[in-house]
Image (cartoon, rainbow, N blue to C red):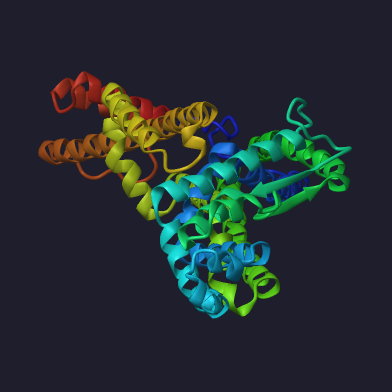
Length: 445
């Protein structure tokens, strides 16, 4: 009998002790709790601190119709607050119609808001927004990472989002003279994101996020791997548990995203801005949702792998069907799996599969899992072939005995009797040398 990789010398797996089972479960539980912190740190690092991700989010924000409506309202309000619109219009009206400037300014406010929405739909204006947002984000990240040479430090200044150019563009479309627009205060359309007294704490937080986003993931994967390694005799069950842990983490992240989004919308948005705040939340947490979905996907794959290696009838049937190919055509298996994996990497459905370390990690896991599966199916194939050979020998022996007129044997035969009977069948030609050798080996086991 072939010994199990996790088993004792006779091939029977030895179950882990109660203390070891508790240790394995403890490691899985600790890793799962750390995984939640790791997900949060990874989201902040990838969504909030990565300039490319921020630029992509800014583009999606300005391309969203509900967000454009809210932004248009803000920009028009900024214009009316900082410019004497009736006076500016009066300059362009004939002397006998200057009295219409005030009601005209009021009447134009709503149409101007709608036209600003259309203006924000233009690619050139959208690029102004994207440039302003990306430039501000880059400056903010540089400050938070305490980089010098950007005109702002923790001791002075603020970080702002400058939409002044958009306000000027709207004023020009309204017909306000350039001289009036030149008098706009520099802070018109400026949104303060962070003041100097907040920077020191924020910098410490960013440093922590940078470290946590990398090392917490390493710790989580290491603890899961250690738990599987220590579960000798029950590693398949441990792998399945780890898979379900990934699924739980992913689903919890997706639920938390929805619940937190509802709270943000109810708390921070006024009734007129509910839709735009909701869209901003979805865009701002898009990567968080991707992480949650990826965790569920990885967990499901781990559970399926553990199930495939298990004793269920569907798993036995699948292994039996693929065993001959895995055992006798390893080259073809390597080419098919390698090609499929390359296509998966080109697709890049998850963030990890778009990074070199993720490509290497999942490639190594795929190769290792394939080797273990081939080893298992090879052992099962040997047992199945030996059983078939034994059945064939027994059948031919019964046929030969029946043809020779020998009565069925009663009682218990010794090994010597059985080997002598097999030798007689070989001499008579009923058994070939190979069949005799296999049958003799079965008698002696």
